[in-house]
Length: 417
Image (cartoon, rainbow, N blue to C red; front, side, top):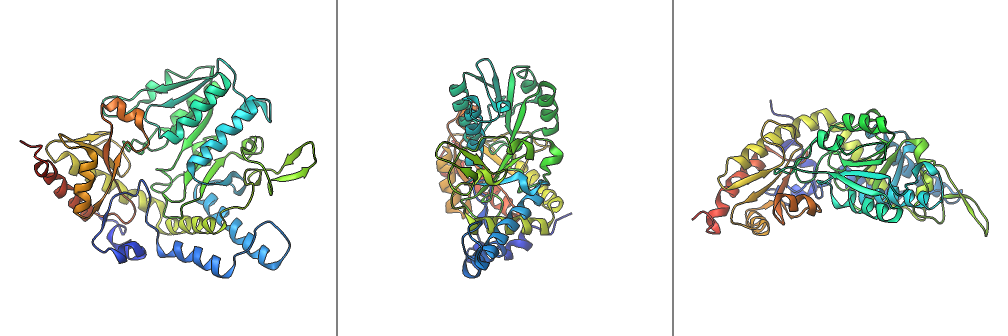
C-alpha cells in the first residue's frame, strides 16, 4: 500500500518547485528543506533576532526562548531530556567533543570515569564514517589505548558476532553507526548496548543516517552518547546535536572553553555550567537552531512510523532496481534483509565518478566517491562507489528513473562488450 509521502510532499519543498523533474537521490549527503523550515529561520532572523542568554532585554528574552524552544523540539524528537541535547557545528564536531573531552579526562582534567589508559581498548567497525573513526584513532594515540574494529565481509557488512569477539573487560568505548552511510546496514543497537553494559563500556552512536528516517528514542535505546546532524534531517547546515545521558554530560570535560559556558572565573581557574550549556562556548548558531527545531517539528508532523514505512518501500525498490541491471553489484545487505533507504553499488568496467556524471546528465543526483569510508571501500577492493539515497520526498518514479538510466551506463561507456 503506497504511503502519503514521496510525490505528495514534494510540494512542501521549494527545491522541487524550482526543479520539478529532478530525481534527487542524495539525501544521505544533504537533504532538501521544506518551506516550513526555511520560513522558521527567516522569520526568526527578521523578527526576533538578538543575542541569546546575554542580557536582560525583551529582545534577548524572546531570542533565547526561540533558541531553547528549538532545543526542546529536537530533544523531544529523539526521546531526550532538554538537558541532554547540546548544540554542535555538526555530527563530526559532536563526536570530536566526546573524544576530546575524554582526552582531557585522560590527562587528569575532569571526571576520571572518562579517562583511558594504556591497555584500554576502543571498539569500532570497519564500516565507520571517518567522523566516527579518526577521533577514536587520535584518542587512542593520545592515551596509549588500542583501537580495535569488527571487520566487514565481501559485501561490506559486519556482524554482531564479529563485534562481540572484540569486547572484553579492557573495552572502554564502543562507537558505531546506527545506519551505515555506505551499506544501509541497520545496527542491532540493543544487542550492542547489552554487550557494552556487561563489560562496563560506554556506547557512542552515530545516528546521522537513522534519526531522519526512522523512529529513534535514544533513552529507550540506552546508548550513553549519540550524535546527529540537522542538514541530513531537512534542516540547516552548520548545526548538529550531541546527545548524552544527563549525568554523563554534566561530568564530561567540555572540549571548547570561553564565554557563556561558565559559572565563576578567576585568574587561576574556571568552573563550568551544567549540561548542555557547558558545551556551548561563544556565540551559538541561533537561527540554525531554530531551523533545526522546525525540521524536527515537520518530521514529527509527517509521523516517523509513516516515514519509516515509506522508506522501507523505497529501500526494497532500490535493491530490486540495482540488482536487476546486469553488471551492477549491490553493496551491503542482500535483498530481503533489513536496510535503510540507500543503496551503494559498483558498475563493472565503469568508474563511480563516470557513473555519477552519466546519471547527472539524466537529471539524477547521486553521490560518488568513498563516502568518507575509505577502510570499508578498501575492504571491498575498490576506491569508490555510487550511492543512491532517499528521503521523505523520494518516490517509486525516482527509483524507476535510476533503474532505466543504470541499464544504459555500461553500453554508453562500452563496458558491455
